[in-house]
Length: 443
Image (cartoon, rainbow, N blue to C red; front, side):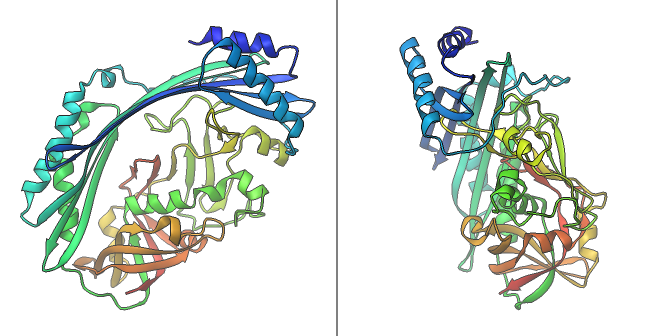
């Protein structure tokens, strides 16, 4: 696809730039939100753009367009060349014809594309209807959402690289509010899949209500240091918040507390954290990154030891290592680094076993304030939380909202056990429930 467009740009740039990379990305996204069995929001977006990254006299310049014609293609080459002249960035960029991966990735479902929009609307309506009728304490269903999307990317460069890929996905999300004696709580559930047959409105709606109802009637918790179990979703949330620490770019710029720690023990030996762009069926699974570099599985923390950072080819060259295939950019932006399927490897104990290690344990099932309450550079966090108190392995009662504070490196060092209930969230961060030796709790 789009071979003609790429040929026009290559032909024009051949005698003007030392090297050139072209990236085209296109995609669609759809979502519908239901309220009181009416469509409250209906969103559909269709995007397509093409960008060039040119190298001239060792300098790099970018430009892009969403207009597809020969005149505009030539204009963005000229603009990128102009940007080279004014570039103050001293990063060394070398384009190559990178090899392909060996395996075939299953990241696109033709059947998913055939799902009728009426069925998507009906599904979202059913989630709301079921949630509202499941328990008399439900007074609102603020979110009953169904959506999907698909993406296509093509990358080629003047060294002969020419790759393309496409993928799609669908998701559903429902959130239920319940009330009892002036106590109001929210519970949510979700699914993301490429198989519409896996979508079950009854299960999602009921789970969201059950989570909400379980939190009603919360009691105050006395401030202090407590052993804590983070459930699988909240462990993934914490991991996502601090995933940027593993960016080699952040480390090189002095914006990560992992600077100078490569090869050191930074976590308990129960902790192994992986970024795996080849994860079977993952929703950030891909054959190559935004430079065309082949995808791979990268072990970041191996049984507590900092084993690797996430690299693109520029940061890898600066550190004298190989790229991990984590280069990323949109057609509108410059090269950066991002994670793919990023997760804590599961343990081999059942979740209920985690609560038997101490007489009193707090389980955290909800966290808020990740943007304002977590410092991605220092690793410190102070977050609003909800959960339950366990005594001698038994759930006693829910807790009123409290604050949990700590530091990500201390948390990783204090992981005493990892359960086997592994789960990905909707943003390709995955984890199991974990037992933390202690965190500061403020009631």
